[in-house]
Length: 345
Image 1: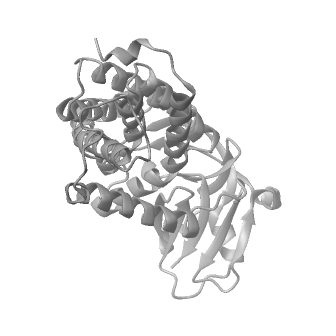
Image 2: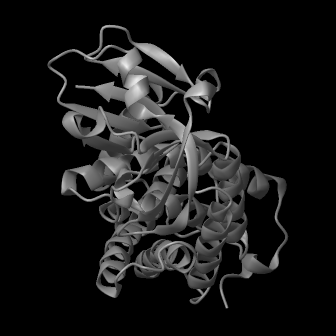
Image 3: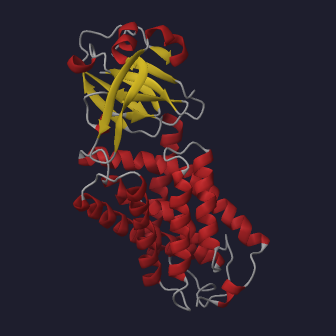
């Protein structure tokens, strides 16, 4: 099963390629999560629509498998990518190791089914690997989600895995080889001149992702933000940086449960600082109509000003060393992890 190179050992070049692709994929995962949140907001849902770009998570393992051609290259790349994402503060925590490992293993198995690689096989493999993330998260987090919603997410992820995973990896591999940036095993097409017009779609996607990534890392993502701090800004006369440790005397306890369309948490006591006290210090202007609570990956929840400015059951608390907004009485979509900004508008 698979090509002859699958029986050889990994060389230094192979391991360097795996390391580079895994590092790139792990670092860019936060940006991809940000894009997913933007898509969710476009569709007016807190979760699910972001699966339209899920294929970008598997493109790295697919590209490694195409360039190296050995069984195990996809699995190793996936595992290392998950490790980089986890160590760089990925929002999914240690679970991302399992997700990425499963994706990489499916890529190795799928690409090894036929003795010769093909575009169709790459598309199908990318689609299945991408859709697997839904099942892993379903098993761990989404026990209360309806079957219909799960199937929608699987369908979106499947299509994305084929287009943004399979096809993108297939075309990028040929661009890299044709440009002599990367060498791979001898292949009948390796020495043929490439017609760049055939790669317009791939080049547009790459340039778009590059431009968006530059904007994200320069204007949105703050790698130096303290985990227990958030900036209070917008339509306020006294913007400041909220530091949880400075508000210990203002904490209160609220017993509630999280109920959401995607996940839920059993009732328990939450201790934190009421958001309305934090907003009062910033002296909001009379024109204030809402408050946007924004996480480090771009996810956000918007609260009507009239509802939040006197609600003592909406708290900023510390969970796993990071700020979290606990919104008693609100749907789970309003509970925001890793809060970095509160913007009054």
